Length: 275
Image 1 (cartoon, one colour):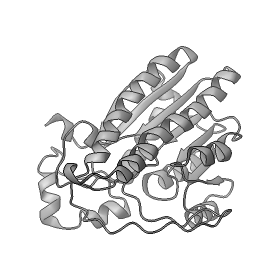
Image 2 (cartoon, one colour):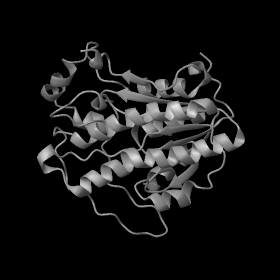
Image 3 (cartoon, rainbow, N blue to C red):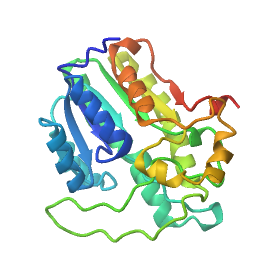
Image 4 (tube, helix red, strand yellow):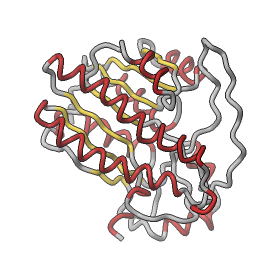
């Protein structure tokens, strides 16, 4: 199926690793011009070597002012993938203010800010567009003993200024991901409201809700067969998602092949949300 993405300009956040990196690679291969946003300079450097022509932007999306400086002049963007996220694994009674602020800053507030920048540009040009927000099955099910795919490793900070960020203490990958479920639930509703308000401008907005995805992080977190079985037993297809399953759906939602789809939350979960 031809998706006709050649010549379109796309912006992908969380582009350094996992789903975001694979999305950049797929868009580049499809002929799109891609702006890749990551907080880790080394990841961007290697991505540009793999995909010449990709435009790297190194910024911590949890910093509103830095994001405005980095993306405020990004130029015309037709397609946006809001993929950047953090998962700070704390049970409800142990959630800290810092974890709460970080989770909502990156998982929700940054989506609002980056989407505003892109949508304002589309409206000013009178151009149609498509926005895909990468959510999670955790937005629609309360999951204990579950670490979702979007957990971030400590970043190598962007240059200028070269202020190192301290590493976060190691977290057990099987613990409750309360903040992820909460922020992704908010992201699903944000998607619907954005679709409602931006629809008259011919800007479509959809969310993607994957199950566990076999990124390197997902493989590491779910390599224990006993642990994996507890989740796989709840997935009718009996398997976790591969990265290409998610990327293929993102590209479809970005393309005109989904021109009548907006305000939707699209599961890529092997049937998990049907159980």
